[in-house]
Image (cartoon, helix red, strand yellow):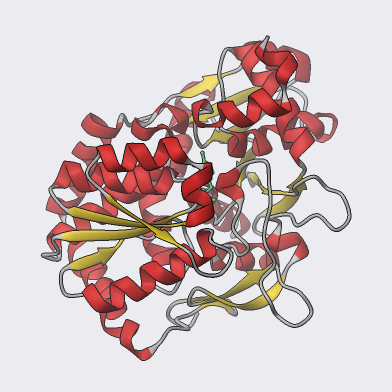
Length: 402
Ligand SMILES: *Cc1c(COP(=O)(O)O)cnc(C)c1O
């Protein structure tokens, strides 16, 4: 495969001025990340600071109702409340190895901004976070968290004043400050090498899940489900399984694991903009990559919408576009109302408040239970916890909040 591409997707569609820092980053990945010193330092950070490894939790009540064992990979238990810290700690550490003194990042819902600010504080790096003006207003508690952690939050007033525009501003800032600054990109998307870098840092999720499945129920799961925004938690969960499935396809090991990514369908009404770029989008170029995008017939990017702000990205990581094309992973659309129903079910049945993003993955399992193997093993990646979603929950599920 061509370097930096996943089939026809990926690449580096960037201004000439961005090529030097992208090449520098690629070289740093090659020279530092495979080294024992880097790997050990990251392992210690992930364990003693972020809280890895995360458990694989059985849901007894839901399992009894569904007729198979439902397991949750508990990324919600990590420091800052989601899988994002796996990526930000890795990139912050790499930045230090590169001799950088600062991080710049974009954020939409604010979760990646908080995870970046925490990693920067921990590793002694300065931190600047670009955030659309609209999001600064909607996500005030996360803005406060970033500032508490020492980050400078820069509101972006251009375009739709949301994530897409914050990414453009962060890329521009990086061009100017590349000597001192690393761009800590928030998901497995953007120009090469970010999709590969973020995938490799998040693959710890899938690697642990494989090990824990073998330990706890003696084999690989039948089905693994994860939600897809930009695609980082899903690619981190799926990638190690895709490699095993390729071996299985070559006849080297046992049966294949079914992998399902869930995109956010918004309200599901006609004319509503969803975030389902893989299922409803078309190929195009955004943020330095060739991938599947939500766009109108003139190629204008459409505003994305979902009840979960973290899934609101009009594009998707290029490797997911490739896995959809090859059939390595299936991608389904889950609408707001089904995610909310799954959210409620997990709160009341298992005593776990999931992020609304993660509830999209759970909803697919609950709504497709009849077609899943009876007595089987099904894993949902619980990408984050739901404390951040209380305002929306109060509005959408008032009966649950008393
Ligand atoms: C940010 C976020 C997502 C979406 O991002 P991906 O890169 O697609 O993983 C999903 N779940 C939670 C909890 C998040 O915070």
